[in-house]
Image 1 (spheres, rainbow, N blue to C red):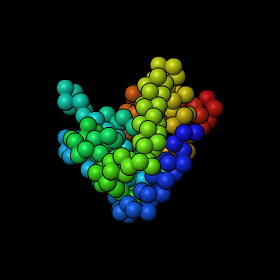
Image 2 (tube, rainbow, N blue to C red):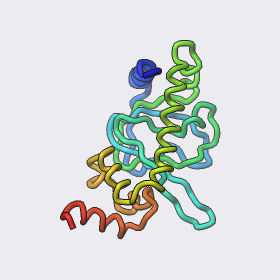
Image 3 (cartoon, helix red, strand yellow):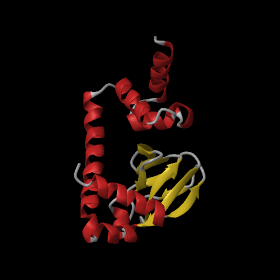
Length: 184
């Protein structure tokens, strides 16, 4: 459990020192191509991560950040680099927001190096698992895993966004929902 206590200390720091901020549904946390300046702890609501495919002229939903999780374009916010993603509120949200520069200073302090390592390890593990799951799990299994992560997803996230995240059509998600609900 290396870094767990540091992780909790970092969470406490974010809640105690972060600026309480509200985002209405559809408000941008950051836009792709603009300076990434913040990271936040989500008290309530959720955010969508999106990327734009300019060849297809289409946006793809690549991830979610739910209550009790952090949201931001890490590590770009630490150095104020250009964001690689667009992050938009999927519902009204309340967050505790910190400037990336402040987080960077915190993570570089002597007592928080374990937190920096824990964040990097967690993010890598999350992305790696999501990547592998696209090959080792069926769409139905990945949808069920998403439901376990956020049970209220059925009421709060539209079919199009879930389908984009799972890389299938909205019809496929609709059929899976029907199978799960009615045992077909």
